[in-house]
Amino acid sequence: MIFSKDLSRRAVTAGLGASLFAPAVRAQGLTTIKFTLGWKTQGSDAPYFVARDKGYFREAGLDVVIDQGEGSGATVTRIMGGAYEAGFGDINAIIQNAATRPVDTPVMVYQMWNQPPFAFVAKKSSGIISVKDLEGRKLGGAPGTPTTRLLPVFARANNLDLAKLAVTSMAPNLQEPMLIQGQIDAALVFNITSYFNLVLNRQDPDKDFVWFAFGDHGLDLYSNGMMVSQKLIRDNPRAVAGLVRAVNKANIEVGLDQNVGMAAVRNFDGLVNIPVEKRRLQYAFDKLIVSPELREIGAGDVKDDRLTRAIGMVVTGYELPRAPAVSEIFNRTFLPPRAEREMTYRMT
Image (tube, rainbow, N blue to C red; front, top):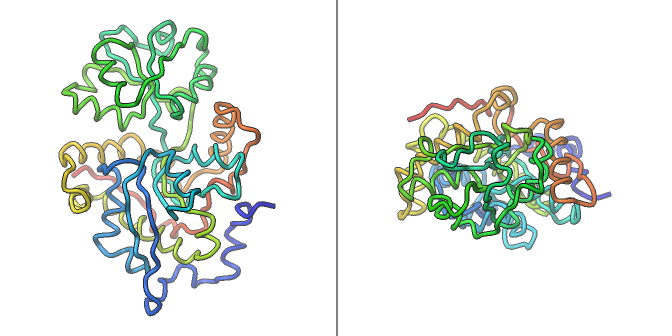
């Protein structure tokens, strides 16, 4: 039996009791956790920087060293390689790796984005006004990304002829320029990335472009959140609990005041475009975080039945050899009580 299936609340808390959620013993020094972001510094990473700047990590007995990332999918492989103990990345990449390497794959412990950023974007002038209009058009996608890999699942869910969805492979940074220039009719993107690439290219992504979110068209997937290595859970569950508690506290604060978040982002990386990244942070709340599910179960959690269906979609899209169990993908053992995870978003 693989270890990750044993990470139930009963199994972990039985040995630790109430002390699991107590701050680590300061006299023994701080526990260092190397943490990788999903990409370069972005406004949507604000909770991690707030937790650092306000001392929430230190209160939990932690010294969290935050590095920039190489992609939300790469967070999983970085942790699997042992260079990092925790990070912000894509739950669908966890599913993909857990299907073949369940013992090595990290586990999501705090779900940040409960709506997927996967989307098609097209110029309104292209005449594409529905997903059916994508058939026969020039599409551009980055190889290996979830948006591109899940295209067959998207096609089946929307009764599209996959043979008529020809995708030209290209680097992610070429998608928006080629879309603007008319070299492709639509691109398979992460909306939170593509939207702001268009902004930075002096485009109006709301007025001049049309968006088709996978989540609105049959692919009710989860997305990015905070994950940790199984080794960290095994060796230091108290540190995991402290990490989750600190990030949750900061996440709730940023929902109430994005200016607090952006001050911490600036402290981490003085080169970021603050107006654009503040918009990105608010976009994350509007499009990826705030939802009826969030109001029902609170920040950080998932619904097991929904995650089971999402696992099935990823298994189909990636043609995986098996469907991992929910317990191999998500561990809610370390979540603070529901009352402490009440999210109120107020644009500031």
